[in-house]
Structures are given as C-alpha cells and as structure tokens.
Amino acid sequence: MEEEITALLAGVAGGRRHWFQAPQDAPRPYVVMQRITGRANYHMKGPSGYVLSRVQIDCYADTRTEAKVTARAVTAALSGYRGGTIQGMFLDGQRDLPAADAGDVSSLFRTSIDFTIHHGD
Figure 1 (spheres, rainbow, N blue to C red):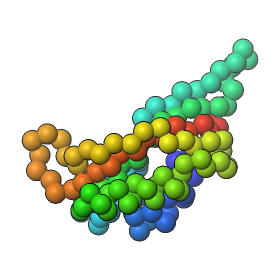
Figure 2 (cartoon, rainbow, N blue to C red):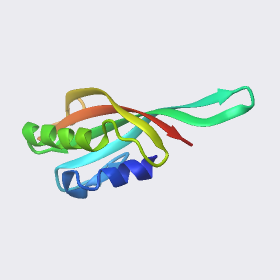
Figure 3 (cartoon, one colour):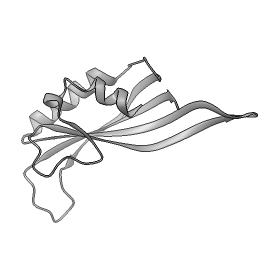
Figure 4 (cartoon, rainbow, N blue to C red):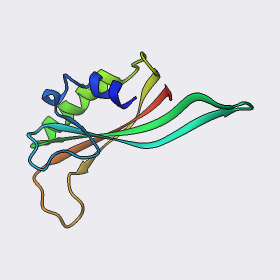
C-alpha cells in the first residue's frame, strides 16, 4: 500500500513526499505520510488478506494557501482511487494545524488529511 500511495503522489508537491518525516531542510512544499492504524480482517479459517488502514497525510508549505493547494492536489490524486492492492481510498477528514507543537516557533503551515484505505496485505 505504501508504495502505491507514494507512486500516486509523484506529481504532488514537486514529488517531495516522505513517509514518517521529511529531511531537516527539505524544500517546501512537501508531504509527510504515516499509517495511523491498520486493522486486519479475519474469518473462521484465519486472516482474510483484507486490511482497513487509516493514513494521515500532512501537507507543509511556507504559506497557508500553498498548504491548502497541496492538500487539494493530494485529495484529487487519492480520493476514490481503486487499483493494484487498493480496493478503495476515501477522504475521512481534513484539518488545518500549526506546523509545530505548542511553544515551538515555526513559519510553516500544515494541512492534515486522513484517508481510510481498504487494501490487501
């Protein structure tokens, strides 16, 4: 699933997409992805091979507008997608957040998007 999402986002944010964290001085805008949950499905004979995952995608940029534009591009690339091992990908939520934790000083803007993804193992 991770490889497929990475490939689908090749045209977003100039191809700057990273799993878990971006390099320290990454050019902006960029996207950071992380799998928040993954729940395997079972039947009476064991695992079915079906997984329901939630992936959070954070869009970082120098301006709020640029973060929103990047988030819209991510949504256009992923929402409703079906192919490969992915049976369906659905936008589940979106929020604007500060780019740093409280107390940190940062000039970055972040829009965070959650997708629910139905996929095979």
